[in-house]
Length: 576
Image (tube, rainbow, N blue to C red; front, side):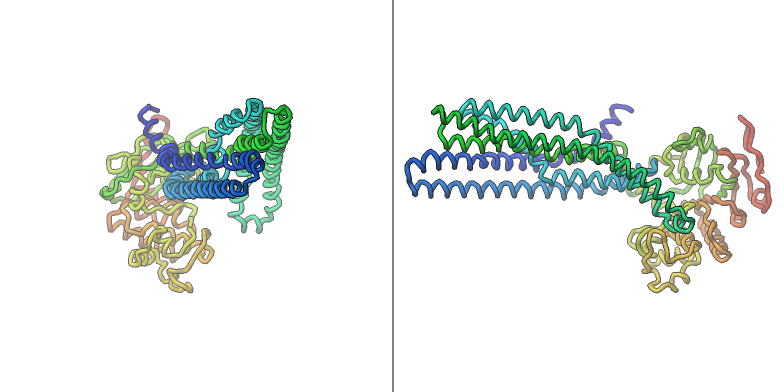
């Protein structure tokens, strides 16, 4: 990867977004500075009470000092509230600026992986935002003021300063050792818990099959194995965290006692006043409080840092695509040269050097045995297959030059496994956008689904879930076809659109294809069944990831026609 591309990716990363909040973070730092200066109030107040008020027995001095102390403490509380509000607003603005980009990047990444990347990316963003707006981050803003408190302790007496410095070094060492011991186990526990949850969520989508075929026991056993690993790693990580926390608590309590003891010795020697002894104890405790807070919140810091790293890598790997709004609709002419498509876990590629020309406004039927690469070719043509190499041109320009937001409205696609989304029927047909009623009805009529929808209790406003439970399998497939036809896109790719259709659905599909041909739309039809193939201008036969034959439909589309053998290595596909 070139340095220019690296800089381009970095410009779209997470760091620049956080840097855009530098003024807010500077404001938080300034308020933290004021708050930490005001936290010296109890120390100074105690010095005044013990060394001045108790000696002079002046009630007026006590009143004046107390009023000043109350005012300073109120001002300290106000500054702490303000910095909390600023961090909360940073979290809200970060979510507004980053939420859409994280979702889009996670969605794009999910095309290349089996993990539920959008959900994990959203969880990572939530982890980062919660840490930024939580109490743990204040420790990092307060930590730079530790030297100030130590300096004040040295001013009171060098012995007190050295005692405070010694305990500060012990706690810093403890924090470093805690990081070394807990960072990796905590990350392993998080990964194991995520793996177990994602496994369960993925399998419970098929709960009907699990219940009907008695597979729940096997699923539970496999989940329990993953869950046991997650619980074990979480317990091990928590044991380490608790050990570090216990050691930190021991150091804190020991520091309070030994600081008081050192002050008492200085008082006995006549080198320190009793007021300074009590004040020094509070001062040293305050000086070490940020370190203790860092140790206490270290686990949240480690989780937030891991989430930040994953988000940064995700955004750099999948930068926000620049919209090229205003581009003319494509005509639909495809040129495919030496197309190779691979998949993770497979040694051999699925598609092995496909060469294909699809003129604009033509209908191409892709047939062949199962596993020959038909669905993969369809996904390559719409630009969603992650690992494709070769030349894939749309209207003479690389398909990769289109952003998904720009190309999507010009493509109608029916996948082999129909996926519907939570919403109304109208919203599903309108691709989850704002439904255009005339276009929604036109798409439903084109698939013969209009009358079926009107018979539902709320018609087009009938709500359906992800599985489309209120619809039959054939109706779901026709609804997916209506979604593909919504907006009259110039390119329509149909992957087994008739797999669940009855006779009426077949007729509706054929009529829809005829209408698309009349409008000169580019159609790619992947199918095992032959009636609709008769409408095609060209039939492409795939076998073992290669073009075995291509030609006009009469010879290849007739029922019972055998698929010609694949061309020999180095040869040309056999004509129909």
